[in-house]
Image (tube, rainbow, N blue to C red; front, side, top):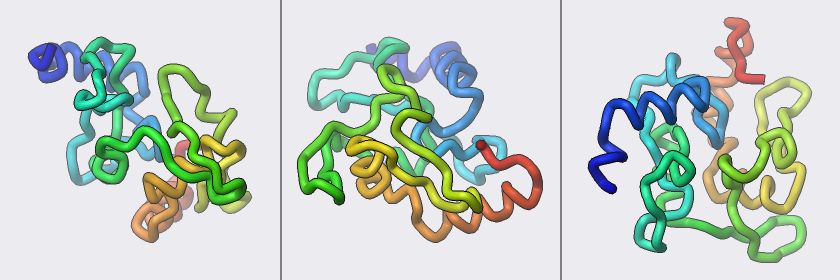
Length: 140
């Protein structure tokens, strides 16, 4: 299974399925100075496989913040909820952009918890969104 994850064909399929956007923060891989990764949505240490259904395309920052997390606290309700799963859930159901396109907002408990857990509004991302918006390539 580990060989599948590292194969060029698998990486290409995961990247193409995501349109080369991080499936969490939506930032385009073409504007990154570090390579994106095939990320296990459910961590391998918790039993995930390496099929295409188990993988997401993730920027290094989101992958690093997510690591082996599967749940986080919703800041609005204080309840523990599962993190966003790009294979089973639609991004637009759980997230929305602020009017100026600089901040990601959680629309649901899952979205709010994921924004916090993955630090989706960290200053570097806000700066990048500003530049992407000015260049007309923001991932709206």
